Image (cartoon, rainbow, N blue to C red; front, top):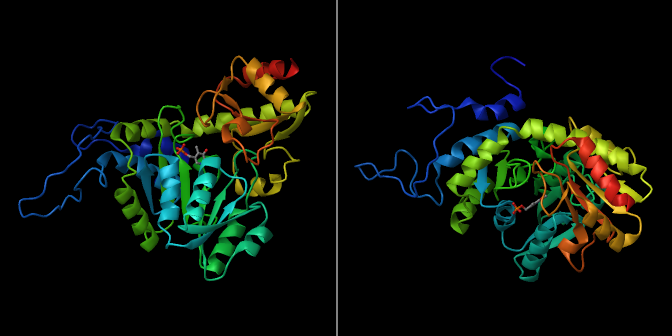
Amino acid sequence: MPRNMPHPATLAAQALGWTDATTGAVVMPLHTATTFERDADNQYRRGRVYGRADNPSYDQPEALITALEGGAASLLFSSGMAAATAVFLSLPLGAHVIAPRIMYWALRRWIMMQAERGVLTADFVDATSLDAIRAAVQPGRTQLIWLETPANPTWSISDIAGAAQLARQAGAILAVDSTTATPVLTQPLALGADIVMHSATKYLNGHSDVIAGSLTGARRDALWERLVATRGGNGATLGSLEAYLLLRGMRTLYPRVERACRSAQRIAEALAGHAHVEAVLYPGLPDHPGHAIAAQQMTGGFGGMLSVRVKGGEAAAIAAAARVELWKRATSLGGVESLMEHRASVEGPGTPVPADLLRLSVGIEDPDDLIADIEAALTR
Ligand SMILES: *Cc1c(COP(=O)(O)O)cnc(C)c1O
């Protein structure tokens, strides 16, 4: 790489290298103002009016996410859900959307609720199959194809480039929830997506202490302007302190994700042959149904998330989770500490998640400790 085009890991470590023009500080000041002064001639030449839509503390984290995703612009939101729902709420009323059957459960539930209210119509399809997506397209009506890859909690893989082609043919947009992949491993925009969404609560922040979300657009087009208006209008804005913490977290995104990937691969391989394990779901294992596409579309690793189906069903899975000492029994993912959860208990009745499934978020601890702890817990 030429010196004027640093690698993404360098951009992240230096948060684009911004320094404060007045003081030379290598960390930008935290802006807490909710309002901004007008010029004497009644204009707002400095571009900011009111804190619900305008916040200088967003500039650097948004610019960094834009650079890492290779987009045109980014927006921070008060949560991943606020970011994701903004995409659906920016579609024309009654729009038809295609979403995966296996996806982040709270968003699936929200889409179903909006469909019941007539805000949109939705088809949930097997998003690992381009044929299934193609069959669901309603020419002239489908406005959005939503993907999540790798998808919660089976880590099934969708072909982003293939879906982008289908979206283009249908005149629809393709939005990708890339929370699990992170910009370290996948660049959905380069593969043809129009919008990338992150629950920045997870890997981008990485320390389990901020709820935040982001959208990155391939273009600053009419859709993007609707998204900007939706964020301001719905008031789904992030606090300044959270924006600051998120930027600090993103500075270590690359080493955190790289280590989590290496450890997850080792843990998946170690557990694959374990006597009390029915199956290990991890796209880095050659027998995972999405392995071939993941190997093409992900670079540098297969992510820090895996799931284990425990022999003996639901009771055995919950009992194994009860016996871990290092892993924390908690929902969420992408933090420096490793988490384990019995996923079906979180999603409740009607979930498509197998009852024997434990979801593992691999942190940055020593992988030998993590393997020893989970092997002991599985062995009884
Ligand atoms: C957590 C998560 C969300 C929701 O994000 P919040 O920040 O919790 O609102 C959406 N998608 C995926 C894949 C997630 O893991």
